[in-house]
Length: 317
Image (cartoon, rainbow, N blue to C red):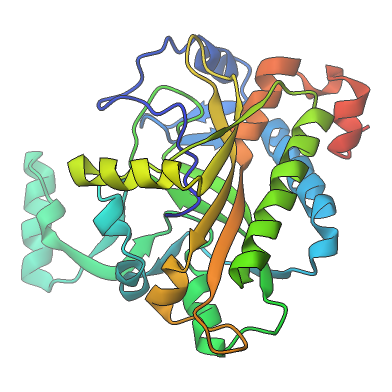
């Protein structure tokens, strides 16, 4: 139960949709292929739009009095294990391994490289895992601080995140940015927070003149057991997504998500409310790359020619 933006999932092995939009983005120099599906460089123009989006999101959340935290796109293995991400999404996780051997091991590694053989078994876990969702690093931090303030807590967090989902869909990147506001506190506080941001998310999308719909959703839990969890998540309406058409011939893509985790993370990390009760949590997640791509899809590949209202919202009028 995290800030996964799940709609528009690609089938195993890649995308079923023609990559015409991807070809156009690459041809315009907005995305730079690396030879790996879902791993791209970004141009200055692409980054400028992303910066404008982040500015608009900051303005939208100015009244939240949020603590701003920024983490690298990795977290400790122990905290990752505590999150139970592997129990729910093993197919998406990415771990960082490094060479830890001696000179003999290094010679063995070099020999395998020279012979074109697999060398990855010469590496060992580093104790560091790629961050799967921007909110994950904040929960152990909040737990170590002790009980939350009486009114709860809001945190503004931004991070590159990793999901192992190779695809030709430009919206399904393996490394991408999530901007989140995360709320910790009482159930009532979280429900009100999520409703507020569902309204504000739609407000932002309309200011950007993007077609949208909001629908109940579920995270991509793994396996047959995961389907039961996903069905329960939908039945309880714990997750909603703001969907925008982006990919060629594909269902609309989740560009924002609005999540109520109940006491899941509070119980895992023993995060306490001021009265000693287990904290509930919720978050709103903005997919920065997906929103940039939605703007490029609907307004054209040259932001200088976008409608004045859209440019004003992005601070580029």
